[in-house]
Structure formats: C-alpha cells, structure tokens
Amino acid sequence: MENTDDTSGSSFEDMGEMHQRMKEEEEVAEEAEATEEETGEDGEFLGMKGIKGQLGRQVADEVWQAGKRQASKAFNLYANIDILRPYFDVEPMQVRNRLIESMIPIRRIHFPQKIAGELYGPMMLVFTLVAILLHGMKTSGTVIREGTLMGTAIGTCFGYWLGVSSFIYFLAYLCNAQITMLQTLSLLGYGLFGHCVVLFVTYNVHFHSLFYILWLVVGGLSTLRMVAALISRTVGPTPRLVLCGTLGALHMLFLLYLHFAYHKIVEGILDTLEGPNMPPIQRVARDLPVVATTRLLTLTLGKKQPGHL
Image 1 (spheres, rainbow, N blue to C red):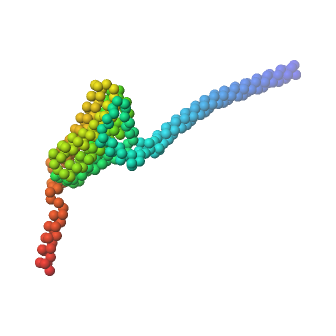
Image 2 (tube, rainbow, N blue to C red):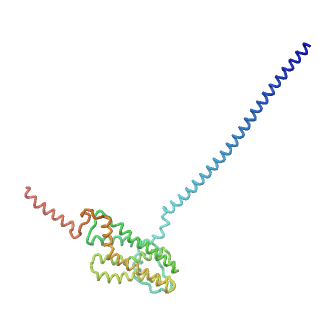
Image 3 (spheres, helix red, strand yellow):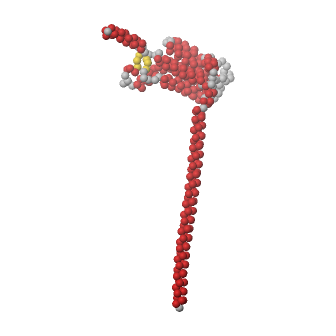
C-alpha cells in the first residue's frame, strides 16, 4: 500500500509537471505567434511606406525634369539670336532703296504689291524720329532740367508705330486684306521716313508755310505709298475706303500733332508732374544762353582783379 501510495503520489507530481510544461509551451507558442504577427504587420507597413516613398520620388523627379525642360526651352527661345536674325538681316543698300521707294507711290494696284518683311529699317527710323523730337525740344522756347524727355519721345514714337500697326492689322483682318503683322510694321515704319524729313527741316527753319508745303508733298507721298500698297492687297471698294482712309488720316494727323501739339503737351504734362511748389531753377529760358552768362562772369572778375592788386 505504501508502494502504491508512493507510486500514485509520484504520478500526480508527474502529471503536474507535464501540465506545467504544456502550459509553458503554449505560452511560448503564443508569444512566437504574436511576434510573427507583429513582424508581418511591420513588414507590410514598411513595404507600403517604401512603395509610397518611391512613387513620391518618381513624381517629384518627373515634375523637376518637366520644369527643367520648359525653362531650358524658354531660355533658348529668348537667348537664341537666330530667331530674330531674319527680321534684321538686311543690307544697307536695301534699306536705302526702301527709304527712297517709301516716297514713291505704287501705280499698279491690280495685283498685290511686295511689302518688305524686315524690322531693321523701321526701328532705325523710329529711333531717328525720337532724336528729331528731342532736337526740336532743345530748339524750342524752353529747356527742362532734372527731367528726362527721352522716355516721353520713345513712348510717343514706339506707341504710334506699334499701336497704329496693330490697329491697322486688326482692320485689315476684318476687311480680309492679305497682309501680315510683320508687313504692317514694316510698311508703317518706312512710312515714318517722310515724317523725319519734314520735322527735321521745319525744326530748323521756322516757317509755317514751309511746313504745310512739306506736309502736303512729303507726308502725302509717303502716305500714298502705304495706301497704294494696302489697296493692292484689299478686295472691294468699301474695305479699301475704310482701311486706307483710316491709315491715311492717322498718318497725316500724327505729323501735325508732332509739329504743333507735341511740345506743348509734353511741357504741360511736366508742369503738372512738377507741381506749383517746384523752384524756378527747374526751368530756364533758352533765350539766355550759358555762353552769355560765362562772359558776364569773366568780365566781372576781370574788373575786380586790378582793385585787388
């Protein structure tokens, strides 16, 4: 019985140990499963995060490359001189011939006449007109100090050239005239040659009768040249009348404006901008030249020198 009891007691102990071991093994297995699950979730999360990061980098690289290509194209467009070369590639002999032809009206208007498609001559004529306007301001009654007239003259001349050319091109489009914007700029630019001649002469020879004669002859010839070129490229009497009448009126009135009203308007604008509280030294009369003042000072100093000796 004792042996039986000992045996039964040991068996109970063995069962307890086995149960304890099984419980420990189950806990270890559960910990291992939990660790595997956590590792799998972290791997999936890291994998998704890595894919998103790669996609973000690829999108950023594509955006950067696209912006770089656009910037390089824009830089090459403005930096490449070959784009503008056809518009300014002209020989001096051709410019001289076109200046002379701008004063000779076209007789044959039954078929489209050739119009030069370059900008060198017109742009040089616009700058020449700017210089003549500045010369006219200097030979007028006043000289304005501490104020630039260059910007006003450039704005007036280039504004007329570009603005009227755009307006005439718009009318030509409405009237179905066969002319491009480049040809319109060239035609109106060479038409300013007559204005330059008339203003240069009349700014140095102050006779109104001479101005009116040159206005009718020289300005009229240059205007007729442009009108004839437009007539040859327009179909129908009404479109011709509207287009050519508008161009002729604007061109002739602009010459009158430059001769009679430009100086007064510029002086009025400058007076308005300066205000009433500006000192009178800002504006001096041209009738008192600097040479006379210098001579007066020289004579005064010459008289004072013997007394000091």
